[in-house]
Amino acid sequence: MKKDTECVRAGYEPGNGEPRQIPIVQSTTFRYTTSEEMGALFDLEKAGYFYTRLQNPTNDNVAARITALEGGVAGMLTSSGQAANFFAVFNICEAGDHFVASSTIYGGTFNLFGVTMKKMGVECTFVDQDASEEEISAAFRPNTKCMFGETVSNPGVKVLDIEKFAKIAHAHGVPLIVDNTFPTPVNCRPFEWGADIVTHSTTKYMDGHGVAVGGAIVDSGNFDFAAYGDKFPGLNTPDESYHGIVYTRKFGKAGYITKATSQLMRDLGSIQSPQNAFYLGLGLESLHLRMPRHCANAQRIAEFLEAHPAVEWVSYPGLKSNKYYELGKKYCPNGTCGVLCFGLKGGRAAAEKFMDGLKLVRIYTHVADSQSCMLHPASHTHRQLTDEQLAAAGIDPSLIRFSLGIEDADDIIADITQALESK
Ligand SMILES: *Cc1c(COP(=O)(O)O)cnc(C)c1O
Image 1 (cartoon, rainbow, N blue to C red):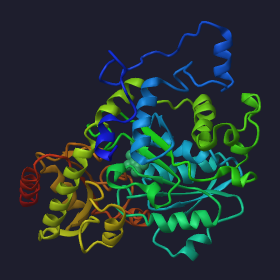
Image 2: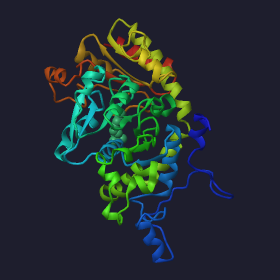
Image 3: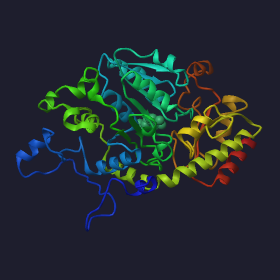
């Protein structure tokens, strides 16, 4: 199937007389007629459902759709994007291990990696994703277990050189994990450029309508964990909690996802509710139609803002003036995403005044929604910081994050024009 068909059809095939829509299996548990059958499931000897904390049919149908879109071999849903990124790394990094991540990543992920995982004994070295191969390679250690980046970053809309990152990761015998939330597989397919594992905050474009928080992990099956037995003992040595099964041996290319489900979901329980998975499946059915419109609106408004005298700067990879224009064309030939950043002349005060004047565009702590929305980090998410502290955190006090929805671009331009003129 082509990508557009997969958005609508992949992952669920109704049988004769069965529902057209993915059924919401709103049940915590599943019945078996013999204890022997139930026992086989607990031993991972047979595939099947027994308790929704580990697996649920609705979730599996939707995960299979995302897995098909990414071109992977196995995938799973999580309760949030945060849980997806945590599970993706923690599945192969234990206390005493180390990993390397781009510093140009979502603030929540940056905190998870730099603060919370550190408390768990997993250390992360952040690197400048635009640095040379040699500089980035210097961050690797004997106990480094993976590398992480965002294909297009939130909020800076910086495009990752996926091939460069994959080359560095593989030269050090570790997989590359990328968060593909902003471009989605409609605009970027990281596995085709060497990434091994993809994560998503499905809360964003995949859901698309501001309905449900969720996440996903997809494995390409390309990284050969069995070839590095000593480095990844969790995948290559017997799991005593399942009678000594070895994930890579028993499940082959699905070993990584099976381990994340049977150990991390079992113990940490960050499952997505089947109801939310259903909403996500519905969102995916129109993802291929919405993404081009988000991109077209962002391109048009980026060009409009760049030409406006009240605007100091605009950052969007679709602009020829942008540092990431060429990388954007390479990895996302149909456009990156619908998010851009800009700053007004007059900095923080001008940004606050401008946003108060908006009528159509909403102020939401959200991005990648069908409704256009803005956030001013200096006044909202980072409001406790002074301009000096913001600069130290790499946040321009004038920065406005603008997530273009799928409304008519003329209406959006009319709204920002009146808000700029009412200053
Ligand atoms: C929002 C976001 C996350 C976190 O996802 P939640 O669903 O809010 O937990 C992670 N990565 C990126 C790129 C995001 O935009």
